[in-house]
Image (cartoon, rainbow, N blue to C red):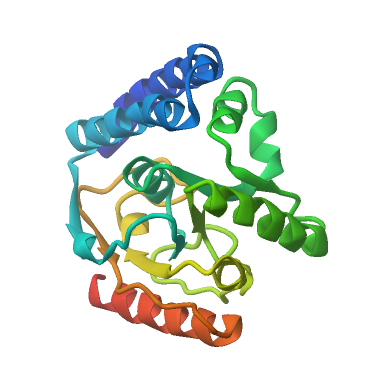
Length: 235
């Protein structure tokens, strides 16, 4: 039954990605960025509703009141495609840091490029940090929040990675707060696996961290400790 449900989900998933990627890089290019992001992420909403219908995966959000006025930098653990769809929709206007290779995927990459992510070359860490700082400060100055996955890659549910300091360094340089985010999405929609598991994804927005006069190393450590402790609570 799980195989059938996952198969049905991916049929709809592929169709929605294709339709909204095409709309974003055609009709969407005639719109201001905010409206273009709203159009593109309508597909995100439909994908998550389809996920619920096909695979029985619901969502529970905690701490929404912790979100400060935009812009801010989000530091989130990374387990699944789910958090990218959810955060891109509900934190807009927003830019996500991602690898440049994704923009080369026909149609999907074109739609992704239209919503102004911060695309970096992970094979060149020094250049990647420079791109995060330069593009990130510009996006924040324009009123867009920035989503950073400091572990750098998706991990299995129950695994914990080392956190890079670039997100906190960006927040300090731009003078904006950091919002830590923890979730257990990988328990139900594991990365790089076909089957989905019914249940409830819990996502928690933590209290914002003030970056005024802050140290990126200490702020990264504070966010990491909060995220990992919260992950253990929502297993």
